[in-house]
Length: 96
Length: 204
Image (cartoon, rainbow over all chains, first blue to last red; front, side):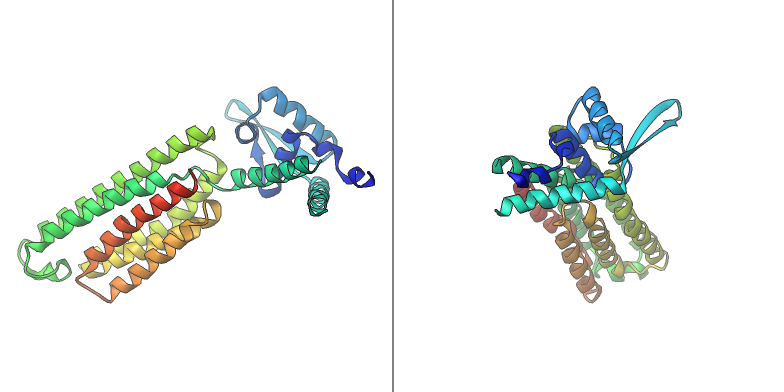
């Protein structure tokens, strides 16, 4: 079972995996857009993004557009690397 | 374990696609716009069939001014109607898919489309200015084709092939002055309808 250890535990959740996939191919993505892409609730997205931020896989930007607050996400270099490794592992497991 | 892995991979692929391409483009939009194009083309052919000479050469004859004016009005009206059809079905599809309509991807698609279209529009205005009516049909087809190819990377890549066909048709029409309306009707009418049907079947 040694092969399983190569999988990143952070990406076990569908929401986190989805967020990382979206951020791999986009620059800044805001909260509303992310929510609609992943089709999750506000709270769900907030908690998963907090955990990704804690691991420094994503970077969070909070700003005001007029009077409305806007939160956006972007993947970090560390996050990119972790995701690529995870993806490579998934692909390797598929081939076996 | 393997099903979980393949599901994860499928999920990654879907999220990447969903977030980077404008997938709400509806085949029905193409069909709608095509029908508008077809009708406008036939009306224009009917209007111009009365005159002795093809529209491209009528600029010297009496009454040509009114005919040209009517054709411009018809073209503008058809354009508005076609864009309306396009937006209507596409917005409906994105609502069905539960996606936001106005996203950064939508903006990218529109900008990519707008650049060649705006340049083409100015070019056509210049052609009108100098009464070079014969080149208008071909020019609109060519710039429209370029716009589609330009927007291809942010939506279904299939629209690239429609773009190529429009450009070929447009280039051909430049060498058949006097038959512009036929090329125009095929390009904006027939091709749109065929393409709309293919797209609709493929991405239902």
